[in-house]
Image (cartoon, rainbow, N blue to C red; front, side, top):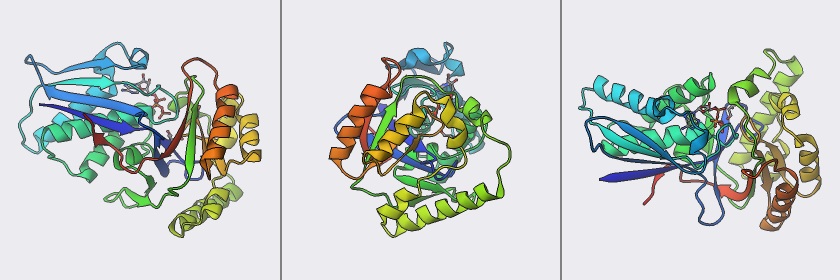
Length: 316
Ligand SMILES: Nc1ncnc2c1ncn2[C@@H]1O[C@H](COP(=O)(O)OP(=O)(O)OP(=O)(O)O)[C@@H](O)[C@H]1O
Ligand SMILES: N[C@@H](CCO)C(=O)O
């Protein structure tokens, strides 16, 4: 039996909710933007992990340093703790996501791996237990615990991380008729380094602004008020400090907002830029602009997406 699980790209923060808001996205059309993990019974008496995909060469040379291997170790430890027998497995990671992209690349691998393992063992763990493990793995790789990529990647849609540790995340309504452009310029940005660029303390004005814009955004989501929601996609926590790390970000964002974008910002810790557009015509126009002006290397790409409401899923 072979099981294959796909986990989608996501926009961490969505600008207005640093570390507490994230949305899964999927390109319009058939393309899968995310990672795939395949699992089957081991051919020999040992676990194996092999890599394929466009970005496999960017990952650590030793498979045991891959986050998917760490997921396997954690999952097996949890199985043993719950007195379930552990089997040897062969894992294949199809690394379709660029590393250090701001698209939640490590989250895609973590989520695909843990969901595949859970499916293989016929679901010994529930969604909360799995999400908790995903958070642990993401924290290990980025140096701090934040669920804003793993939660939407796993559950789909727009997710708000809540204060109750038993619940972790709640789904928010998405604006289904909106298009989201994802423009990855083809350069790497380490999440750890992008976090180190942030101040340790913020002014009272910034704290008030953060609370007010996030609360106003959430209120607008629940009332399906796109105008109010997108007017509040404002980042006082990270963008003012990270924008200088991203080539051409400042002028690109100015152009996007002046030419029909409903909102634009840094996806996760960058360098990918996301743009919310109210219709396909604007999305196509701005996506052409980004292709011509924001990409820095041949590995860069631009996708017009919709919110991915499914999250991690079995694929054939
Ligand atoms: N399967 C994997 N996918 C992605 N990164 C991995 C994986 N396994 C190990 N790594 C390592 O983890 C680190 C991930 O770094 P980082 O958190 O900056 O990237 P990311 O998750 O790709 O970023 P982002 O969330 O912004 O897309 C890199 O050093 C990378 O080599
Ligand atoms: N929310 C985190 C991770 C995003 O991928 C950050 O912006 O540093």
